[in-house]
Length: 362
Figure 1 (cartoon, rainbow, N blue to C red):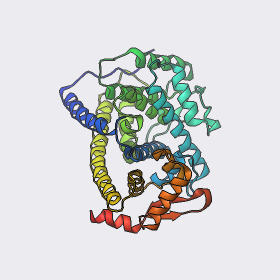
Figure 2: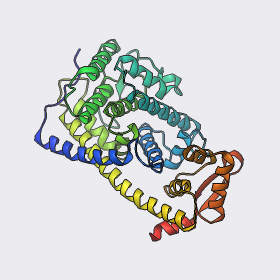
Figure 3: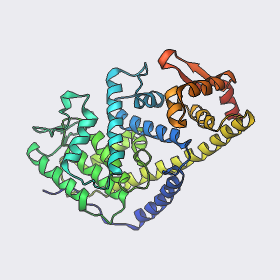
Figure 4: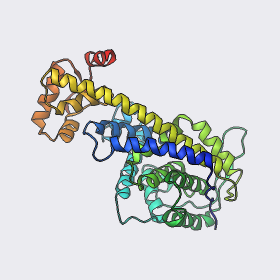
């Protein structure tokens, strides 16, 4: 049983991929395993942005700040309980992606996809987590538009096997971004599950890229772009898919869309990183001015990034004991750089107005 065929190479797309590769190498050199400790906050922010982008497409909205808290195992007050469970589950699936990306013995199989679906959808029993759908499915496309007719349930198992066989050994010389795009298209078109198909397809796309080993999964994700351009995302899928599953249709417009999304996100990440260097320089200068230990640079940087700092965060990042972490954070609070919010075990520290104004002046 066939699946979508990877489009042939074109000069225009190859030039865009060359441009993308330069951006990705730039990011890898600065955010890879040898990156400085202060980049940990950037990776946490990127993970939150990817999670918000993917889950918001399916109606589970939360702010970046709340999502950072949820992914850290905390429970912010604003998001609904169901939304928090969905976001936490998505984070667990991306953690699994990071583990699989580093596994030298990993091989693609249908079980991999089923496992990821279980992790993503375990808060939704009605989605039959980890199980293929039974019966036909029609995917709605909005008012006045024809629905999409996915393959019959009897075809799903064979089609999923076909996709994972291709992931293991098909089109290996092609660019990872192209292969990741085709994995996404095939999974979302087969629609193998009752619910969560889009989230699974986007997570699998990230895993294909993470297996390349260049960047961590949260840094290769185009979910932030898809979350901001959901209408265009659905429109290009509708154009490529047509009214019913037909892998003979041309997938080129989809691949072009994904490449442009990757170029956009990588360009944004480069700008994001350049701002981060300036922010780190300011925090390092503050530490020198006030004779702070170097470990407090990362605390100031994280607060300016908009991520609340907890005692546990500081202990983990700096490798210090709890009493030292308390002293560090209280010192920054007394000096006017941090504000303390909450109480008891929910105490968090955020950038004070004094720190924000110093950064704005910079």
